Length: 191
Picture 1 (cartoon, rainbow, N blue to C red):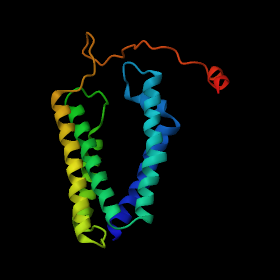
Picture 2 (cartoon, helix red, strand yellow):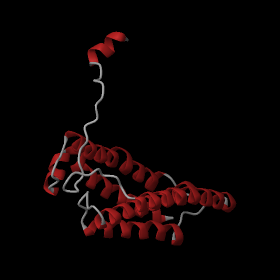
Picture 3 (cartoon, rainbow, N blue to C red):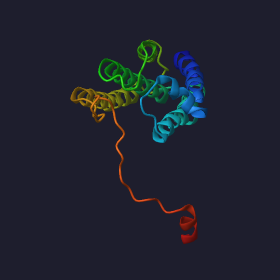
């Protein structure tokens, strides 16, 4: 019963620690990577990743670690482990093709270790459950959904990622014409 308590408790702290710098100072984190072009949109999406880590992922992991037990936590471990597989696939693919995100090899090792930890706890130290039949149905049903998602991811990676190209075969930023948004004042006056 302590497998997921320990794993998720430690992971929630690591998630928050890795998300805080990106959340609080995204440009300082992205600048050293040396991307040829960095836009406000890139910085915003980087900050959104930090926001996800600090406001959603870390609290969810902590809540599951300390306040949830049984089937729900085992299913969360399954889904979290599958998500780590998906991250590992993306990083491995990117590093061996475009290297668009400039991942380092320790990132791959980290995701691999995390996959092994989540599935190790799920297989060898899962939370006890009250109804084994219902647990088996939940585990199989969730596993099918996860397997379909991972298969779709692999198909997408096999088809290739469309980064757009310029003469140097680098990703380019395409300008998308769009109508300007109405001003805040016009929005509030209409209400």
